[in-house]
Image (cartoon, rainbow, N blue to C red; front, side):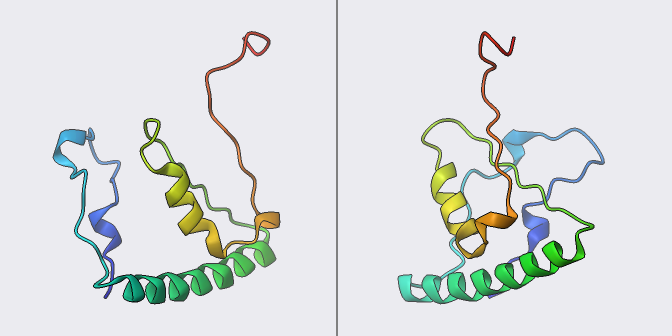
Length: 102
């Protein structure tokens, strides 16, 4: 099953109206076993592509996970980043600035 990234891509050609975006999408897998098979396949591809990005030392990939508390960010990061070498990543937390930072 192919995932069409255009279903999730926001184009900068106008104002984004969040109420028009679905909060839930249909599953892309048929069973838990099918999900694990797809995850393993995509994890391997992601790992290969991270190696290429790191070797080129020219391009970077920025991932932003933004949502309310308990919205599933940690679970999404865990699944997406499961095939990525953490040594090739930088993680920054965007929180309310502390009194010292202000």
